[in-house]
View 1 (cartoon, one colour):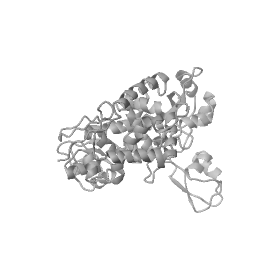
View 2 (cartoon, rainbow, N blue to C red):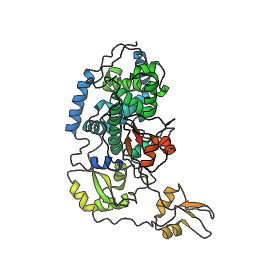
View 3 (tube, rainbow, N blue to C red):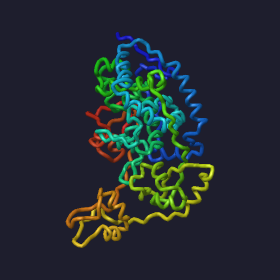
View 4 (spheres, rainbow, N blue to C red):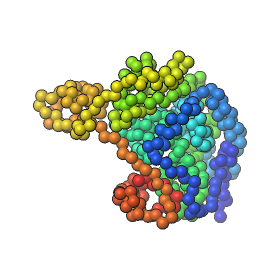
Amino acid sequence: MIQKITVLFGLAILSFNFSCTTRPYGYQSYDSEDLVESFLQTDHLSLSSQEVLKKVELEEEEDIDQSLFFADHQDKELVEKWIKYYTESSRSQFDRFLTNGLYYKSMIQSLLKAQGIPTYFYYMAMIESGFKNKAVSHKNAVGIWQFMAPTARSYGLRVDRYVDERQDPIRATIAAAHYLKDLHNVFHSWFLAMAAYNAGQSRIMNAIMKHGSRDYWELVKMKAIPRETRDYIPKFIAAFMVGAHPDKYGFSMPNVKSMPELVSINVPSPVRLDDISKSTGIPSEELKSFNPHLLLGITPAYTKTYRVWFQETDQFSKNAYERSVASLRPIVFNDEAPDYYKIRRGDSLYSISRKFKIPLITIKKINGLKSNRIIAGKKILVRLKTSYDIKKYRVKRGDNLTKLAKRYRTSVSKIKRQNRLKNSRIYVGQILKI
């Protein structure tokens, strides 16, 4: 029997639990719409104060001191291979990753800590995206945490033509922490939770059932999981080892300002960021830099209010912002407008914007138009669809897909498609998107 392998990582948090059980794990059910918003409404949300950062860094240093030694295991060479890759052949790229991360580090680590996730999972965002907020993978995963759209929506992130909250580093970090916590509750192993984050919960669950092991390293040895996932944990460990002690590997860290303290303010919706700028006196470009997820420069039209990020300063408090935006008048859209309009002879973008009461710049952005030139007979998008709601459900004893499809008024095939299930077999404790 293969010897159980343990990596001494942090405060022994990354140790394995090999007991198999059909009892429900400690999964917490919540409404996906309220998941992120409820966290944002807390008054104590301070993202980058130097006191919080210093405390987090001290605790991380304690973790690091106890994590520099790895037990002998068959994949030690794989970890060392990635350390060599980061410090030699891909050194310049890794140096950029380290620098990019300095801006987000205090925000990410303080939010992870607030939700009970080890702070060194910061390095997971590094291997996901290199801390590039606009990063898009070949599979259309987006943002620092590389969320696919269905998963993002199921964890409370809006993804539509108005907003893509995967590009809001704060909201995305909150959602990623909840996702990791749920995966850990299912697998009782941080390594398996990370593997499921990378490859998908069903694929890791199927590998465990097929090969009878809950040991990530054994699954790697048996090639029971995809190649990318077999490299995922060694890459993470290597990034952690180098990032924790950059000077040891010859990296010099520049003096980069941390992400400033931000507060979320409820504003009437839909409103333009330019109008918020005029109302508050904050430069429009600054507002847009703190709210990169507002794709059109306006808040969503399908909600009465929306939380926008502001920088709180000695001159401008949260209460002052709230007073400034309270009198903003929402943009009026025509809810009866069709999704598409067939352009007629004599139409112009200006006449179409007047007809459907949509700003000209919005019509151009949602249709990807660089000029005002349009062609009669072509169709143009004049109304934006909202994101659809996806609920999360933890499978209970006695459940099957047919029962769940009937209960939630959907189809078995749709549940299978949303969860990438190859067959109808589900497991107690499994999280399904419905």
